[in-house]
Length: 216
Image 1 (cartoon, rainbow, N blue to C red):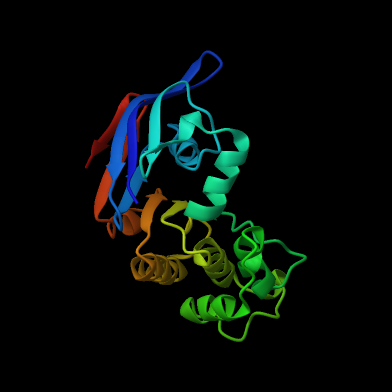
Image 2: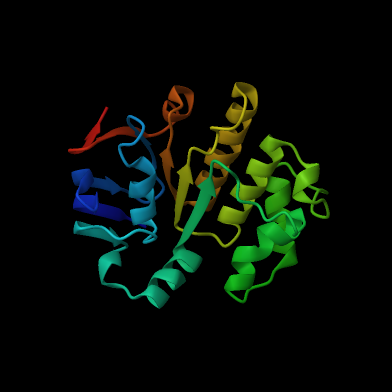
């Protein structure tokens, strides 16, 4: 997997979010993106997943120009090639832990209970599959989100402030799981974060501003 962004610009009406953003993420690389609040870090992550449109520039994933895809093709790309971990977990409260983790496989028509159980074990949640999300701690919920994002073996994992709601000790443990699992699966990881501790563990750290993205 390679992700290549060239001269990307994004506006909301008359307001420019960022412009001239260029970056490359190699297969298996862990890249952290930092920057001031409101500079568009989450928006950039959404562009990488073809969730947001941009005004100029290009986003290529494995040579595929995401800007040229129709909505169905974008949905298929997200189901097959990307995983997303959010700060707010976005775990569905009416489904148990195992059902939450299984969702990406169900969307691909690849129901596989053994793989779900293996992912739960890998993130330290063995035996908790039947529990409902409200029975888990914040750190456990984020591990559910990581397992769900990786269970379909995506080539690109996008993480938006995944430790922002966690205390430092729990955050460090969640980062251990996130990094360990992406390395094991050979996935590329792009992490948006305000956390110096989390960013320090990346292979590279990029600073996003309104006028571009530079390596720190």
